[in-house]
Image 1: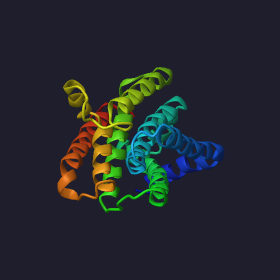
Image 2 (image 1 turned 90 degrees about the vertical axis):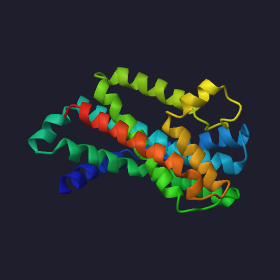
Image 3 (image 1 turned 180 degrees about the horizontal axis):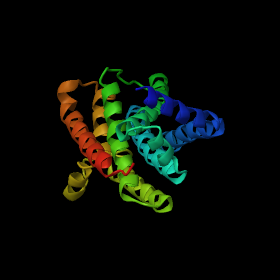
Length: 234
């Protein structure tokens, strides 16, 4: 645990050395939320807030994990970590802890929604966001596990995530889509996170209505993390 905390501190200090990045990240979040949500009017304000609270978690969890591992590999830090007797489990645990920063962005979006729309605040919001983050962290581990170069990985990350965004119901509802696309959506963690969050925050429903989505998110988390952990060279 001590090694995990030390590695996490190192990652956080690296962020603090570049405060401009965090500033522009927050501005980007608010800008995208405003442009695609309120200007284009893709649904009610409550729908927009629920979707983006999950979308931001998924985006940061996926990108932060894959890029953090790729950066460490490019800098040759693996050898240093091995010499310090840091295990693969401890290393990956530190990267998972690192992505909890995404919860702050989700909290910011929900706070905006609290003051601008009628949303339901429910304890289920937290497990939905956490499971969404973890499922995408697992997907983030798969990139460096199977891709050798950072340049190639960045291209795959962009294509893969933007494909997930437009296939999952972030900007629309799944109703009316062709059956084949609805089937494909079921394999995308973001789909289940968005639908669960809308069910809780917009409709005010409870665990009985979202247990299936939570179960799928749990299964996808276990599957992606298991494969990523086994295949990632360290």
